Image (cartoon, rainbow, N blue to C red; front, top):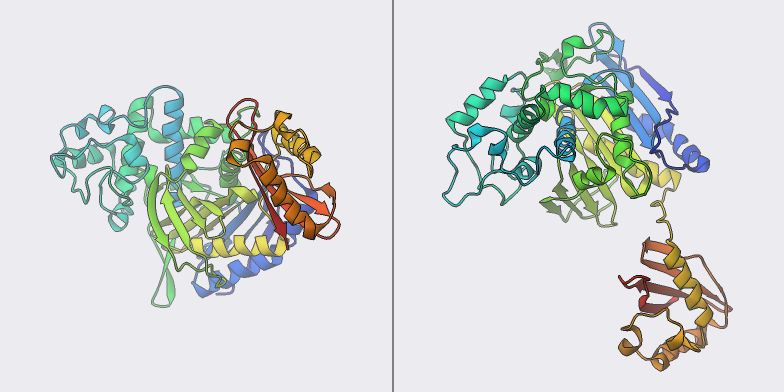
Length: 501
């Protein structure tokens, strides 16, 4: 079957949480579009995907999006950023956001026993006599002790509420005691959906639609496939016997909370942009379904998953990777300090993934309509390629007023250190830790090679109270690193000099 590729460049303005963007930065990223298209095209052809759609979110906007192949083979309907794909476990973070919305309303706490909201859990037999009660936080972080259940869970979407309750009442088979380790559980997120329904007094799907999707402007995200416009619904396929065979679509049900969402690149990009809007922390007005601090809390590594010391990026670059699970979100950090946050999704007929790199202000989404299509590998390759080709660097941390002030005051004291002890800019530990005479000798030894100080660079902040700058000298440069104390006003507690080669 001949593959047809379409692309769409879009500049969809997000709402008030969009950050200020650099036109040059956006132009450099746009210029990578042909390479992005080829990466997805080659990956789709290699893995026999009927159709695929993708989007790149940058600084609060869906900047680049495109589609390849067909959302429905029989009618040769092209896959586009508007096509509606079932995104499977990408749904889990939406469920987690619903839980945090209820917490924001004061209706539950994350460390509450889950049996307060699903009474049938109260008398359910535990694995050991010393097992703790399952909490909402256990369910959010895959720490409830339930077994990994992807093969079984993937066929439970249309289960009814009463069937879930019957399963609980009969007793659940545990693989571990709650609270001791990570093990992925679709059942746990089905329970979270039931908690949302019981606490809100509304069907889970209705609550999420009203509280999460509506504020974000996600008007084309649905749960039940029969409600999708026929020309937009992506059909699911498996590749078997060298042909594509259509998978039967499941109806929505209780397990929709773990994997039932049906959405497009265009619509889901608004959700991704909201996650990016939580970084960096700011004093701007809140405009989302939950607080930005709630979003950051979701994204934290609450439950360690694994350390892959031999991890390699798709391009072959070796870089160890540690991973963990947040609230319905996967978290990773590589050997270079690059943090990734997002989630995969896989069901009969579908595979998907979304991922953000908060320090870079970018995120990616890709949906495909082949059973368990692995989209994490290609998305990671695309992000890595965009960063390299566009020359992207982590977004700079804003320099706080006190950090800039202390830097300027310090520069005025150097190299003589005259009246340093009377300056009032150093914390009480500073000179007892090392005297003025010893600090002057250290700097003088560096200046003997670097020459006379002629100026300094702007400070590069590591955070609000820590940073680095360079003393410019006639024959070389000296790196200056300092940190401030927790008192108010913050004072210099540590100061280090080193030669720059």
